[in-house]
Length: 312
Image (tube, rainbow, N blue to C red; front, top):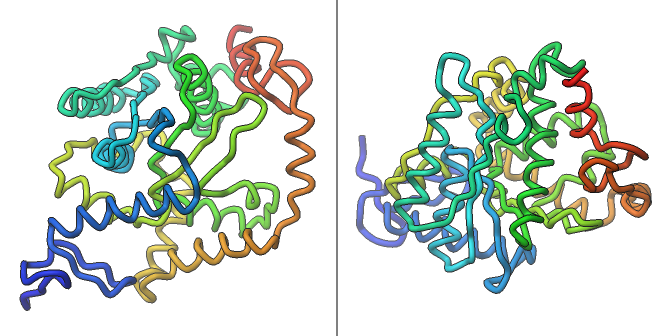
């Protein structure tokens, strides 16, 4: 194998990025990820150094890498982890929680842990089984529960913004899925920044331009220990299938995923989507009668309805 030099020095390149035609050594790669993250934060006005950021951590590479970058850049970034009780004989939640706690301890950072079963009386798997939405996989129930809990923790802690570790592979797969269905309602809501409204906190994705392999490389080079197992409930999911298809396209044409998503963002900026319907929906949000969070329903929000169903 030929010796590949870093484009910024004569050191051996630790990372090759074909889509950028860029090779970087470990030091310059870490610097690159941190600078590009800062650039995205500033360009999309995600948050400032005076705002309090809550980082949703899962114990995986993306969220822990994001937390590391934000702390390194000097942002007021605390973490929070939701223990969903997904063990199923493999100890998934136990392992991922340990990774999040170990990282927080190593950085002297604050981590809030929410025990889902302790908070609501049952694990996410049990909640899914007791509701009509749990007939197949609990992923949809999990998504509703995590969004609800994120909003609640943000309000309790008086945080200004929630940051998640969604990477380019995640965003491209979601966009691909919505495009296949031509779900314009969902497409126009997909963005690196979802502004705060009706008590809902601002939500941002500072890693949206990084490939999954790039965040994994950053975590490795920074010595971040993370859980490498996939969630056992995710096996055979539609998202994983779509990621596989996009990876095949990427292998044939480097940069395809990045072009797909970034050109979509340009279309958004050029008012390709009519936002009147979305803005009208937001303007007519109600308050959940149980928890007080915004909802399009006139009674209970989706999460509180799930809890009510589980108790029947």
